[in-house]
Amino acid sequence: MSFSSLVSDLTYRDSDRDEKRSTLSRAKSYASTAATSVSISGDISSQLHGGYSHPLARAWQAERQLTKSMLIYPLFISDSPDEEMLIPSLPNQHRRGLNKLVAFLAPLVRKGLRSVILFGVPMAPNVKDALGTAADDPKGPVIQATRLIRRRFPELFIVADVCLCEYTSHGHCGILRDDGSLNNQLSVDRISDVAMAYAEAGAHCVAPSDMNDGRIRAIKLKLIEAGIAHQVVLMSYSAKFSGCLYGPFRDAAGSCPSFGDRRCYQLPPGGRGLARRAIHRDINEGADIIMVKPASQYLDIISDAKEIGKDLPVAAYQVSGEFAMIHAAAKAGVFDLKTMAFEATEGILRAGATIVVSYFTPDFLDWLSD
Ligand code: PBG
Ligand code: ZN
Image (cartoon, rainbow, N blue to C red; front, side, top):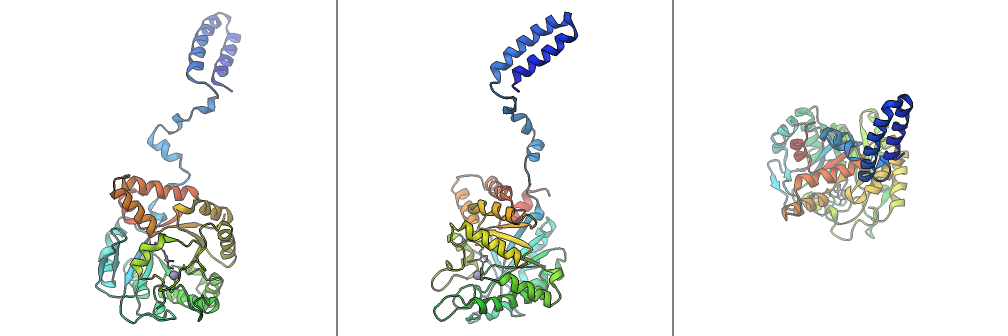
């Protein structure tokens, strides 16, 4: 119903009730009707501004609002205990040894940090080999950091990224055949062992990022066999696309492949159907959380993941390249860093994610109230 016909309808009912007043009111409403039809052309439902005129009303328009509990902060744990090194390609991010961890985390936990994801960075010479043996070394950075964080920050939820690329001499995410391709069976056997070692060390969640086929099922079965499946979250990097946005991360973690690339196991950037199949598969194999990565470039995949995995939380990884791009553009004066960080991250939530892995986490802890 248009606004002007609504007004004349009211006028008509008015005149029914009181003959005398009706002349007046008709005159009045005639005037207001005329004025209104000039200022509002079209349907009454065209009037939207009132619904978001107040800051709180604007907040109510969001289906989901960013809160601190949605955030997972990536930590690069060096095997050199006293290291605290700024990572040149990742603004404000450091590689830290065990001895620097507690002092760094304490103020973040006080500000509301709820979860971290751990990446091990072996710096010692000759520690890498073809099998990624160092990945589940009980004295290695991820297992040691897990134990330390569990002890010192019992409330912090620990995710362990599970992959071999930081630990293999060739830098690929699994065990290779002689021709340089991934040996899927050997890789899955090895990666599920590594996941078990992290879970047994106390990680609340294991998150395989290797992209070998069938690793979710293998990990789930080993968790069940060990009797800890009921207390470990299995988060799958299901839709992980290949591309250049992981560059700063590989710099930070020293995980760049020494030859070739990851295009035969990470998904091709246009592969929406493949991503959907991988999501279906990982849900069937026992994943508790589905992840999409990178985030802002793949909002369609995030919304696919939410549709396919209606009953699962969907996580999105705002990867190192996304973070570095926003920083670079903000530094060049293209936009304000905080405004852009919110726009990018809230866009990811709008697409359907309720968990965001983000290097902006320490900033958001300052910017958000809850
Ligand atoms: C390891 C891993 C990578 C990332 C998460 N886990 C790098 C890669 O696959 O090359 C990327 C994270 C980021 O770029 O922030 N497999
Ligand atoms: Zn990897």
